[in-house]
Image 1 (cartoon, rainbow, N blue to C red):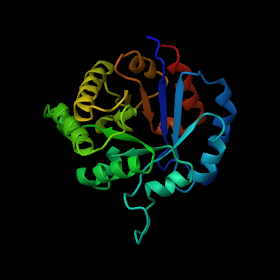
Image 2: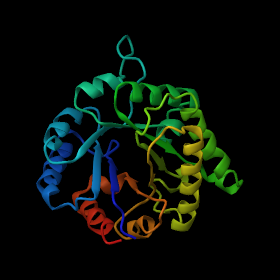
Image 3: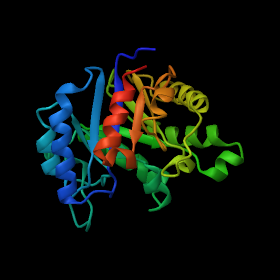
Length: 254
């Protein structure tokens, strides 16, 4: 099935240092003219390399996003960077509620909600990440967990009418393990996500559902072949030019 838009979002996490980030950014920028027009690409570099990478991407049609934000604009919050500060530096998107923030750094549902509100208030497009752990999957509560994460972040939001909303389903057990979710299973969860979002935020425009978790050039086609999956959020494979270009190439074959 040909899609009108294919979301290819790259989370560089802490894989690349300052120089490595700039080298990869320049290499991608030089390839951008060859990308299919349907591709909506956004890169999420580290905070340290954010500004120079943003400058490289500014005029080549590649978006730029923050991996994490703080919900207070300014103040005595050592080590934090606010959504407004990222906006002033050229940011367009921000990840919110990534599983590594939730499970490695103990981010609560309440903190995720505050970050989501701050990102939206700053004029950025939030990318809300949801997903279950291996134990939750084994206990058969994936749907309950995902719905709870969605509703907790979205239920109090005053959403601009018609603005698109982006949700990334990233099962925790699939991230960085090489054990990707079965595409059919991902399709079912994305259908639940879209239905839940539309009920929780009736004014929202298109709900773009991304899949993340051990995505590579070999399996991306199977995910994008599913009607409810609009794109991918990729970690490690996006931090290497060869594997990311392979993903880009394979994404437009379906």
